[in-house]
Image (cartoon, rainbow, N blue to C red):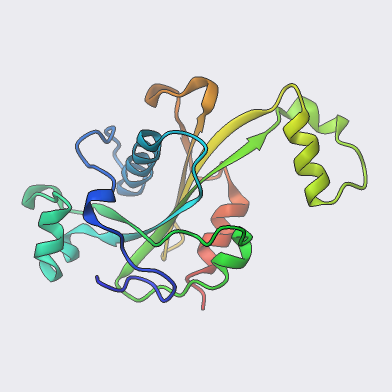
Length: 198
C-alpha cells in the first residue's frame, strides 16, 4: 500500500482516522464515511478538502500486516470492513473537479472518499438567486446571504457503484446531528465514481 494512487500516497498512520470513536453502523461503507467524518471533525473547521482511498481491511491485514498494525486494525474486526487511507493533500488553488480528473486508482483500492466544506442555502433561498452569475459571483452571493450554512460533506463511492454520504452542519456540530444517505451529494459522488472509469 505504499503507492495507493498515481497522484498521491498514504500519509503517516498517525494522521489516519481512528476506529475507536467511530459510530456504529451496519453497512461497511457507512461506517467508513462516519469514521472519516469523525476524523475530520477532530481537525476542526476551515480545513482543506481531504481525499481517502478505501481499502478492504481483510486484504490489508493479509498483504500489509505491518501497516495494519500501525493503523490499529485488530484481527477480529476485518470482515467486510473498509479502511480509509488519507492521500496527499490536494494542491491549493486547484479546482476539485480538475484534481479528481487526474486520479487513477490501482486495483487494490476498493473505493474512495472525499471530505470537503461548503456553504449552502436552504431550498427557500433558491428562488432569490440572481440570474446570470458566474461561479465566482454565485460563491460570493451565497457567502453574503444571511441564511447560509456551513456544511462538511463526506462522500464515498465503491468500484461496484455503492455510494454513501455524511453531512455535518457547523451550527449543529455533533455526531448525533450527522445526516447520512446515499444520494445527499449526487454530483460529488458522480465525480468520485469517474475516478474509477479510467
